[in-house]
Image (cartoon, rainbow, N blue to C red; front, side, top):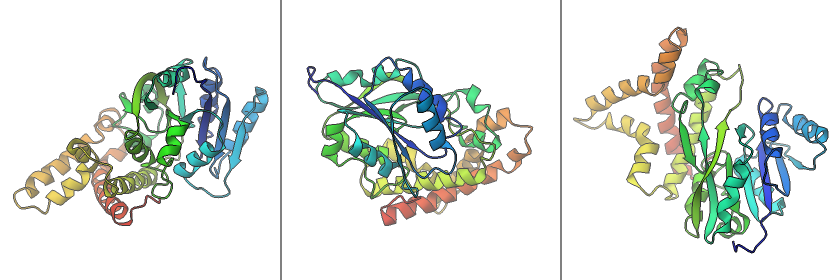
Length: 320
């Protein structure tokens, strides 16, 4: 983008079951020092009161917005693309419904687009222990690896893209991805036409705060992520050996059980993994009787991951 070109920002927020966090996210957004030209909310057939909360928030604050309602759930990739198609800004910011950020985060996120060759910009996301402690047992298990840590890169939660770059690469691949993996696939294609800038924009991930979060939700999420990784592998999006190991170590642990001389070592690693994967839960929730079944549940997730990775690779589509 030429430095003389005027920057306009469209914010696209897909919404699904966000009633516990969406008001806090919207409050952060309207406090930004950097202005944006529009907010497009895609209500992806949310079963809760998310839509009413969005409408009430903007009516209360006398602000303009657009809201698109889906009669049935179509997924993240489809929602992103619909918002992009309706947008008028030169920059597209994707925003999830369950984050909070500082008042200058939008400015930091969009700052690199004054430089030539930048097609996208990423953020860092924190998962504070204070928030993790508010989750129920199973949600703590799900976020045990992230708690107290920061992660970097594009994941859709709070990222910025040049709209013309998105159009050049064909936007998000809604045919191959539904609700996971679409971000990694897009990054792969964007890197071929330009540079992705890391920024100092920082966010905190709240996630859906629900007492009803259960082991079934973890299984469902594992199916989503594993299926998407299988699709990414089939599409040739995983190039480095390090990324391959990071994404498929679960599957490799099971495969090595069938390899002579490696089976015992693999079995040892699986037992170690069953505890290490959620070690924070064992340290902080040792009085909860759920920890007695947690090692077996973690091992069960290895098989879920293997099956759905294979399914995604064979069919070439993430459909959950």
